[in-house]
Length: 266
Image 1 (cartoon, rainbow, N blue to C red):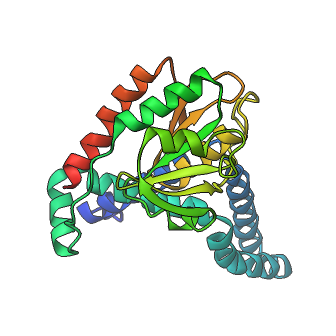
Image 2 (image 1 turned 180 degrees about the vertical axis):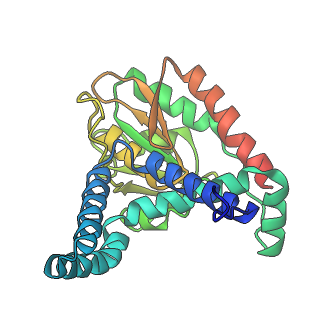
């Protein structure tokens, strides 16, 4: 009955890859404003397909032109999502230690990386938490942060708890914005980060939390937030926020997430 259907292993692999691609896109776009745009585009495509099926030439021609231009518009509208999508796959690839070594050997990326001074960050966060001094610290990993560094003031100084506390001191001209840490050095301060467009974020989140989430959605960096209102310490990673009870948990989190990464990268 179904002799006319010829399914090969290549066809099955093709279907699985497309299904995986669609699922990953859905995960990235879920709970974002971009999801509504995707729904509208799919709706326009269905109407266009129906118009062609019913031989409605005028409507199908107009919608065909809209969809044609829409491909270019997609790259403009979904630039952050496309960037996050590619970053997601590169992180999956580099998560495998063997492939990571091959990748770095082929592209000569085996330069040493300085291990992060966890004590300097945790000590500064403890003091700022006790005095309810707001802070936003971005710790670099694989993603390039040059686009954010350029929005602030260059410092390029050795990481220390005293310098971090001085930067975020309320009367300091550098306290408003984020500090970027790269290779155990404070690269820049007063940096501007993108605000998350996730409409489902709690209303209690202020601009620091939303900026931290936004930056973690576009990069693989780890962000530390000290609330100015409550003094509570939180970390943001991959678009999600984790609230920590004390700096001891922050230290454990750094030792587990950051230094393990630096050891694998060397």
